[in-house]
Image (cartoon, rainbow, N blue to C red):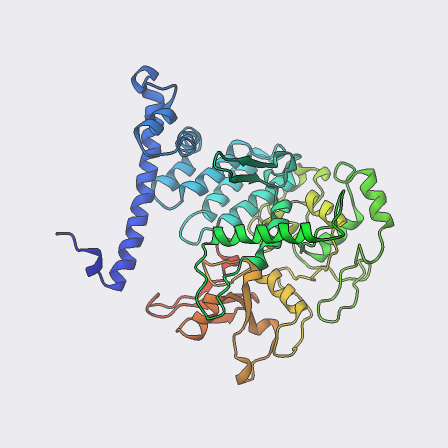
Length: 472
């Protein structure tokens, strides 16, 4: 006799939900395997369609796009048994399999065969288990494309940008867009402060859905733009974006430009920009400019220019060790994630930059004790280290987080980097009102200790940005 859901204890609810989720993964894998067999064995006449996708759409509740994705996975995984095994055993999601399969089928052109195998195995390991994070997988793929490919990564390809605005029969406007990472970063940065839930004056909770809040925020941005008396007719202001980058890489980008990456016009413009448009990196503690010829660079793995030859990187046994390092790529945007060398160089020409000096572990250097409140410079440093809410499995954007004192300020705890961690509002409250604990480990990154009710062994868990494998 099946126990009714309402009769389950809290522990049973959690266990059953996890078990059902695992069964769904296995069933999805079996469906892909069945479709693969249908694709090779069942004739078009028997299907009544040119291929399995049409049959799936007509026979099930699946949408055409989902059916096409299943067929693509079924055909693709036949050539990569290691990806298929991870999916079939239920340790990797279908979405992560699709991401890795796309890379495996169209690897960077200068990545040698042995490098492709190493990279694919590393990506599969990163996508295995509940700690798998899409952002880390995409960041690793971006690094490989940056080092061994000649084409711009898909996330940065502006030629693929599309923005549809269609008026419906009932007089509404439907929007649909597909943007590169930098355009996406601009949009999300503009929307972020306007999309937070805002309780009414009487304290009534904001019951708008996230989609409704974004729509309201978008309308507010349009109102502000149209009400502006000095809005540009052509062009516009430079984007106010934060680009996270190692000092060594920033110096390389500013001093070594490839002709293919920056046009003559851009080079001329960069040479004539004022100090306010192109700022030197600054020490985040003192605010004093750091000049590249006197700055002390970090000891992390140096990135080589793509035109220096991917073969040399491939021959180096350590060429792939930094695949899942902390910095994600040469550049990193708080909302959209990793950026390649070329796009980072382009963005460096168009932004006011403040470089944060990082060590080989991705930790900001040269911070001292301050007042109780986290300063703007410390906030930038925390964002560079934690990327967002550091609680395992959360990762909410840094703009939605607060600086949490591990050792409370009232008890004598300093406002230092080794006593601070970024947490979203929910997890900030959780740390104050539960048995979860957090500490800064020997790697200078946050580690979280779950209560015994979550993990009887209380094994420390890495922060959200650090979850996943590291190639030794």
